[in-house]
Image (cartoon, rainbow, N blue to C red; front, side, top):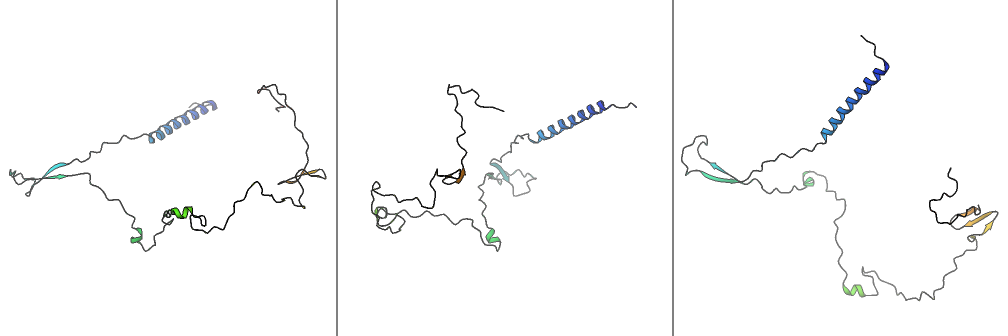
Length: 185
């Protein structure tokens, strides 16, 4: 018997695994085939003779044969959920039955003393919004935005933040959008 070299072993292993992969692909793809539906023969109304005597024995008397028509398509009643009737468990409803509220009448819609849902409304006087004076919202204990103290700046909503200064750069505005700006390391 001949000794097999490592190179031959490697190629035999690769070939064997390739064959296994092909077999698996074929097996998996055969599972995804769509089966053509077999034409189920729908029973059409057919004539059936009913002989009072043994039907295997033909008596030759055609007058006694009755013709019966059988219809294959009969309406089937929809199944009902009778689990509460079959068990001693109460019926569980996830949500209460939804009902639409009654529409308000025209008098309820136009009545200014109550809302359409029936809530009473206090006397509300119309106010000219241009003449309303805004209350002073500044508090004496809170610093104003932009106030500087000990090298920090107060920003409303952020508090005291260390001031970093403006470290931005100016970009040449010659209109070339494909021009590299800055270092791209």
